[in-house]
Amino acid sequence: MISNRPELERTPAHGLALDCVESAITAAAPERATRASVGVDGTQLRVDGESYDLAAYDEVVVVGGGKAAAGVTAALESLLGDRLTDGCIVTEEPADLDRVRVRVGDHPVPTERNVAATRELLELLETTTEDTLVIAVVTGGASALLAAPARDLTLSALRETTDALLESGAPIAEMNAVRKHLSATKGGQLARAATPATVVGLALSDVVGDDLSVVGSGPTVPDGTTYADALGVLDRYDVAVPEAVRSHLEAGDGGDRPETPAETDPTFERTRTVCLGTNGTALDAAVETASEAGYDTLRLTSRLRGQARHVGQVVASVAESVALDGEPVEPPAVVVAGGETTVQLDGEAGRGGPNQELALAAALDLPPGPVLAAVDTDGEDGSSDAAGAIVDASTVTDTARASERLDAHDAGTVLADAGAAIRTGPTGTNVNDVVVVVVPETGPREM
Image (cartoon, rainbow, N blue to C red):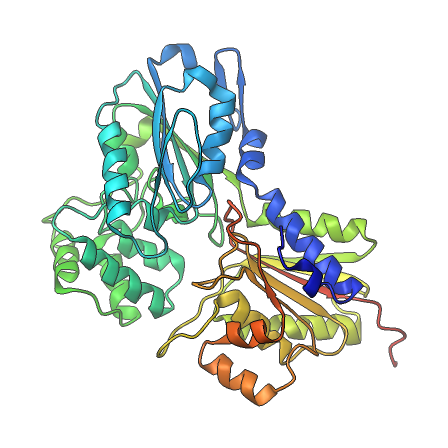
């Protein structure tokens, strides 16, 4: 899975950190997660404890999008066989499926082919009836890949807004509050487009806290945000957007446009969405790998958030506490954490992403001994070609240069030069970021 593992595995501690990373990504594989929650017994489709009688439907259709959508859909094709009658999904990478059309789009900023693919998906939903079962697959990346601008907006306006939001440092939930109100699919609107069909949403969470209204901007779940909330995000983070976007949001806030469907909307009488896998799924697998290697373990949190460089300093302080004080766990130990940190750009960005920025900041503070690996489980950290990085106290030799590059959001350059970048290529899954800290036995501590 880690294509450059031989050059990264410098010590047993490095090897264990990489083992934990690979276990985390494997545990979140969409096929595996789907089969754990979905099964078919005769004519009964079982989804997380609830059954649907396939004989009661004339058609079974799969729609959706995201980086892991093809993997989930492949598992559904295998389970449903010829009961699956049609489908269309939008992914970042091509995939060969038998019954469901795969349309390739772009991420993180939508393009014309995203819009064309999403319109094709919506046209399919227009043909559904009350005798149709729609299985909607929503995974990380769906916010960009399922891009259908509200009818009065252009793609260029959507792209400019997405770019501005990404550069603002706003958390994903607040970014999505804006995007839901500029879209024809987000914020429960995909489920509304499928009415009067029965809709089963299958989500693979890539957001802190696993709020299904945030995953992929919640196309199959009620939306608790409003046009006023979206305007608040723009103002709070000083996000400059095209005038058409602000006018659209202000018109909605003034009652001139329909709101996204809330929990009381009739759409959700026939819609249910379940979560197939989360960041916690990945962290549990990393903990198990470390335990089997004979290390004490601590699952610190699945809710890491904040500026990546600041989080890196905090994680480094935890590593130092374990190594020097034996707190909160005695070495040899492995501490794992997950979530999603952010990078707030204040100028031109260099090379890298949040995980590499976190790792470089940690490397500047780590004591000798501990090894830290930080990766995005989708294999793409920010806009770079690396999943993340693995570091220790010896990774950075020129601290002045590293600090300068960190300030310029160019951590990827320093880490690539140091031979510390982790490369996996696209993994086919997306359950947020994973951080692993291995603290080997350091010998007796002074009392």
